[in-house]
Image 1 (cartoon, rainbow, N blue to C red):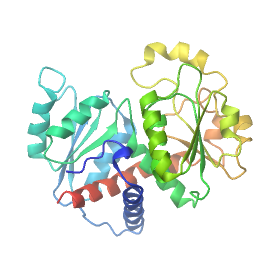
Image 2 (cartoon, one colour):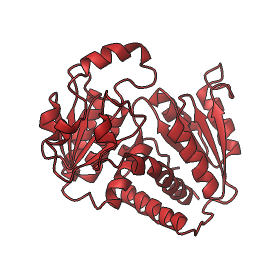
Image 3 (cartoon, rainbow, N blue to C red):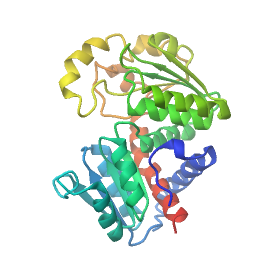
Image 4 (cartoon, rainbow, N blue to C red):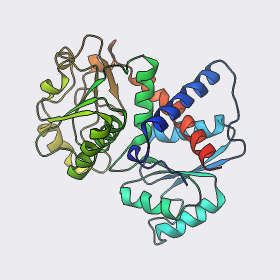
Length: 307
């Protein structure tokens, strides 16, 4: 059984194969040639964390593939209200063809996958957000922007940072991460990425100065400073992250053809300025649309691998 819990479980060839398939399916859709790759298949979508892009992209995606999506919030099911994860996993997987989970603890989705009879997709955990990275890299492929790739990630050492670490470590490009002191990425995940990078040739650098990270970068990316579940820390984080806003001055240090990415939602004036988000180097809204297409490619790939 192949699940999609983290990019660390996938080879470079498999990641690129999923993205190639996603681009193919996207081109078919844009040309009006909609193929039912997963007719009558059902996708159970479990949301312990709410989301705009994750729900719309997965629900629309499975519909366009010829299947049906079931939205299940933590108010709709017994998961987290007394029923063990393993019981919920066995029941839901016996009635559906695929499951997507967006939750807090990564350990929860790992346990769920152990007991699931069908593929489980990580729609986001506190540790990783791998479907977003498929969309991000797909966007770079479409812009012919993957040669001599130098990515600068500015901001919190969160699930997006960890996912960029895994993508770089698998594909072998250069990644520079700049976080404020005390907000670095998880040490064990970093260690794992550095070990994987020895095989791929990836160059991974960690800084506290965003200017050093951005110098000559071909891609600049960031994320919100306070993720869901960190609302109580927001005021303190805004104070501690001053100087980490991706604005015109910071972007001017990057390569002249650098692209700007952001997984959204974006808080203008905090992690990114209005001028950068809406500027000519930003491909943020193409990136957002590609969540739909990348996840369709992923679902079709998983369906083929497991059948």
